[in-house]
Image 1 (cartoon, rainbow, N blue to C red):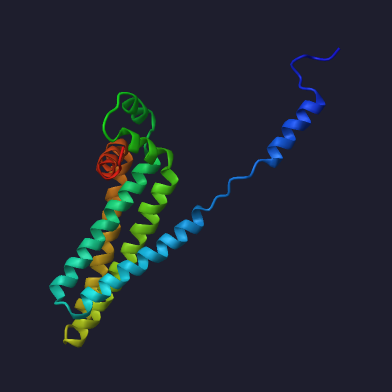
Image 2 (cartoon, rainbow, N blue to C red):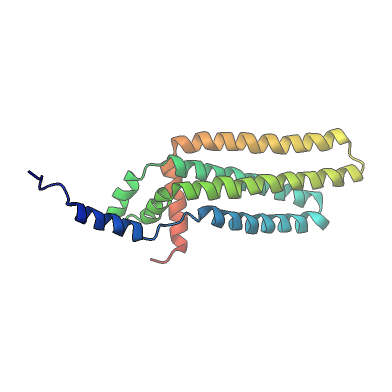
Length: 193
């Protein structure tokens, strides 16, 4: 005797055919990430070259500080996105709390947010700040500054960047929802409802 809960073979075949005919959603994120990285790295590098080229050393130092801060903050946001819990944002969204819908979107797209913030922006800023540091070292060396001072400057940039990211990751792991909600509130100002 045939079980009524079991689908018939022709019915199962039709469902299988439908599944095969559905267009498979392609994961094109890596292509978008490639182009985003190219555009952002070109922009950051161009700006830093223009600033460091003829600017006094004080401006170049400020650019490096800005790049290191951007790298640390975006890395922290990327870590928070990967660690956050979507449930509180869903509850806030049901109560229509400002920024909660954006927080839900960020939490649902955590892998992309983390990739853009931590990998793309954070790494580009780290690379460009290193290149800026090298340009400053060359300028100082040409001006007669000791090679020891120049190398020490590069080491300090690397140490501040790495320790800042380490602190940011620790902070982001324990305060992930607060960070994502703060970012969502800022982003929701720019998004039309």
